[in-house]
Image (tube, rainbow, N blue to C red; front, side, top):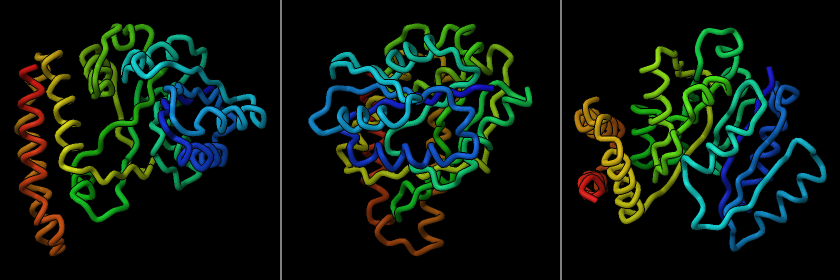
Length: 264
């Protein structure tokens, strides 16, 4: 089965070449039909680096959009619906792939007709609160069979500020399809967010739940509480004083951001 990789880029010059080489080293690289980059107009050398790589590898495709045109859902949806591959792999520019069998482990359950979608295990390589949130809750980098994505009408032309993966996962499950979390398909995905950035992330998440209020039925607030308890417990176990000092303001930034986002 053929695979298309879809990756949005914005001011991504420090990521592109390393990530491309990590993809090129995959055991399933021959299965990859296209590596599709969605380039939001950047202030750095993102475009020129992609152009250079394209000369070396005709699997690389790209389109350039203006900053105001980018949408986490719609930009991906447009490329996905034009794909003729059997499987779509969605990644972000800052994902690091350390193992050559990442795509193989991720896509094999789909190729074997076991499920319609899979998610990788996301690991954090810094000693922040994110280390523990990754342990407890692995956000999705999704793989969706192209026919299924189109059959379910993708993101329904909705413009989401974030959490587009949650929306498509909800549609898959409620339509009787299966999603598998693949713990043996690992990527490194780490950040060091300021409180302001953390607030903005959860503000956008709150806006997403405001757009899709029916998802609030799935006890999101209760999950957030369990996550906070898990982080505190693990930080105490490891005597991670930096995390413990940052715990209350970090969780407050998340909580307030979510609440304010839901009111907008």
